[in-house]
Image 1 (cartoon, rainbow, N blue to C red):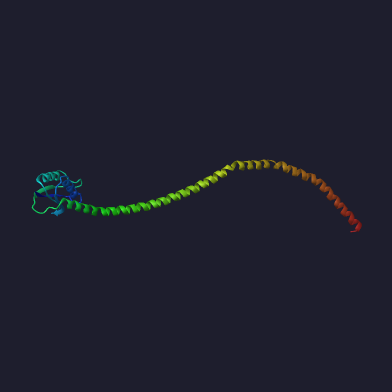
Image 2 (cartoon, rainbow, N blue to C red; image 1 turned 60 degrees about the vertical axis):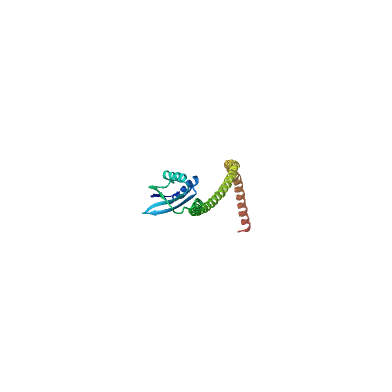
Length: 208
């Protein structure tokens, strides 16, 4: 028995219809199946040729009348007798494989390009992470240096206290210097007066 089915609708191409038909025909072990896309009066069509025993063909037609691919939009499904050749189901399986591979290749190429872009971005990100790590290490070094200097603060505080203590003795030192000046000044005045008297006496003797 042979039949021709015509599936028509706004969207029956590029929705996996031929793979859908192949899967259901294989489930029913139909020996003969041919499928191809067609367009008539501006409307998309899928032409299905089936060959096999009546029970299997009837079951197959019931399946494709009630079910369709998820993205398909079907207006009607019609059947008619057919006397021409019907290909083997294995040929349809091979053709569908080639069609799917042809559709997959551009997607795989896009995925490859996306992977390259991701790798490039990853490499740039790793470079930035390394730079951040370097900056972090330098910052940690500076923090350690600050801590080291901070540890010296008690010693600096002791030095400042010592300076302040010495500064507190300055008035006493000044008083001592002042006293020394006062002690020196009277003796110095007497000695200077004696020297002047001796010079005058020498001048008188010389008659100058």
